[in-house]
Length: 50
Image (cartoon, one colour):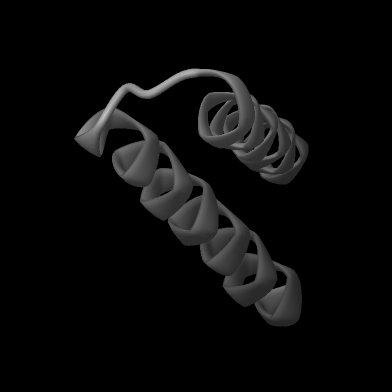
């Protein structure tokens, strides 16, 4: 489960970078980065518990 969250976070960060460089999608890009950051934080929190 932890690896899945990490993969999703990386994909969302890559999509966010592509969006900020190449396309103008407005608020959708910021939502993607927020979701990616939350996924990374969840991974860090779960990693410390194990």
